[in-house]
Image 1: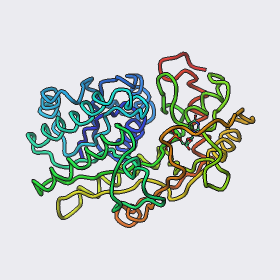
Image 2: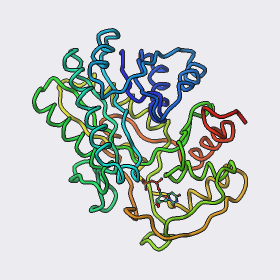
Image 3: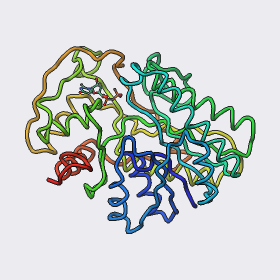
Image 4: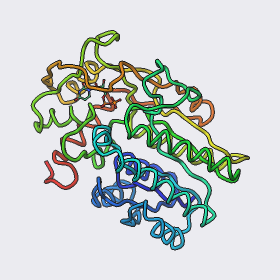
Length: 342
Ligand code: UDP
């Protein structure tokens, strides 16, 4: 298939592009590079031997997306472009709502005009909100605890309505749990700008000496060791999940929206991740327990049964491999793509 990947230069996008290319699909990347580097395309070429074309375009620019689809006809799109920092979304809600919703309106409109109606959408386990307790399965009601999360809830609803209005649409809503890890080559990985908000990128910066110690946000949760439980999933497994979803949609006998959790089905605590990363880095990484982070829930993990059954997909890599691969990437690219190599 010929596949447009929005946000294809980003963390999840770059790993997904590699997987698509390796499966023989022809990929066109659209990315405004606002939170990614053009060097990613060089690295993807190193890994796959294929130069994937990049259009540096903001997906909210519908005219530009229409022009790209006219110039490079595709069979399907994978839509990952968007803003994703929870804390920033609290400070800049209008920017988050406008950007993330506009990107989806623009892409879906341009796709419909071009007669392309197969779409894999990047959603999040954040749509399970704070009211349920894990495991989370796809039929639970959705809600959110911050503007970023609401943009995902709303984009899902927009896409369900689009599919209800025109049964030719085939749409996958992929709810990611906590993506971590990197390509085993160490050539692509997560490169957060500024202060990393998420646990594993933060630990990677502690291990490489860019941060002094991990701050553990609370050890008084109702969990086995008191720290928060999350369903960490290797980004390589996540990328494979996109490929499976795309191929499943393309082979389906009918249109409609399908929702799949992409997670492992089990929770790992902050202290267990700290121990795994310390093993990967070969030294005990320093930490200090501090108060809870506002808005955090105690525990989140997926019920991945539907994805197993309908996609024939399951996550295979464990937390040690996730940390080892993250460390390989961080150690060899201590300042990310644009800094000097180690
Ligand atoms: N966490 C932490 N210190 C950090 C970042 C995160 O203790 O510097 C904890 C956080 O409270 C949660 C877990 O690690 O229990 C995963 O947090 P992350 O931000 O990576 O994912 P999310 O909370 O969005 O699922």
